[in-house]
Image 1 (cartoon, rainbow, N blue to C red):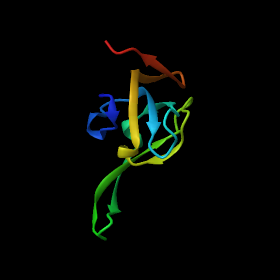
Image 2: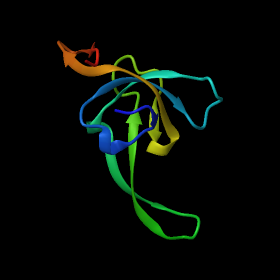
Image 3: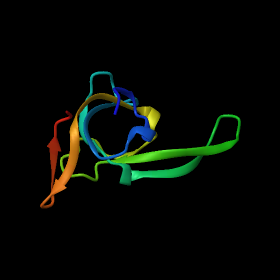
Image 4: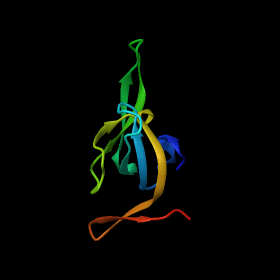
Length: 98
């Protein structure tokens, strides 16, 4: 998982990350778990009235997420990847990246 705009193609497993949401003021950061099972394919309409394939991700469905709601990936900027997230006994844990 790279730092920068969220690339859903890199979301091969859940990651603990610090993100900034584009619609919020600069400097507002949130810790979230970016989970591939929370990505949904959709269609969206561009300014010319055409539709094209897209995807959205929902935040806030993992215990401890500090942001919630559906987001287009280009509106989620990954500031830091803290590690790989995994669920153990109903709670999310973090395994640091090697």
